Length: 144
Image (tube, rainbow, N blue to C red; front, side, top):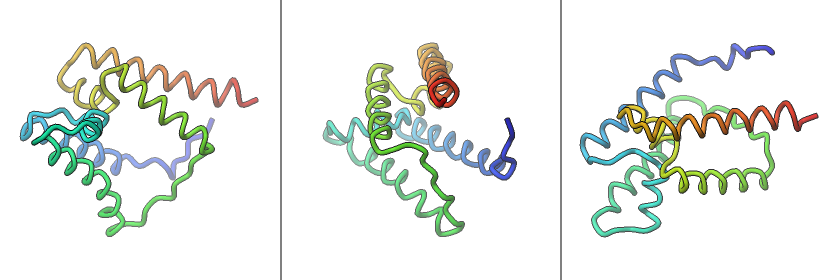
């Protein structure tokens, strides 16, 4: 195994983590809401009067962030090593998992763990273990 040192970006990763944490903290402090993306988007699919504006602003901010980044630096090249079918299946499985787990990685992993939620710790451990197992099986067992 070798490490691609050109892909090692600790400062950009740290800055991204700080921005995610800051956004999650500000949403909780200013709006009393958890920054779980599946819950935010789910609330847009089943709108409740008076609850749409902040959700829409949050999602639009997520979509606008790459455009703002592109104004200052070149966008990194995207490399997707899966076909369309695999991407659709993966997206559906993630959607089903967020419903069964009552939240997603941002809700449980970022916001729940920072609030010391035992349920979020269990959910995060479960989806991390499932991710590790999936990568191991697909890359090392089934790839031969």
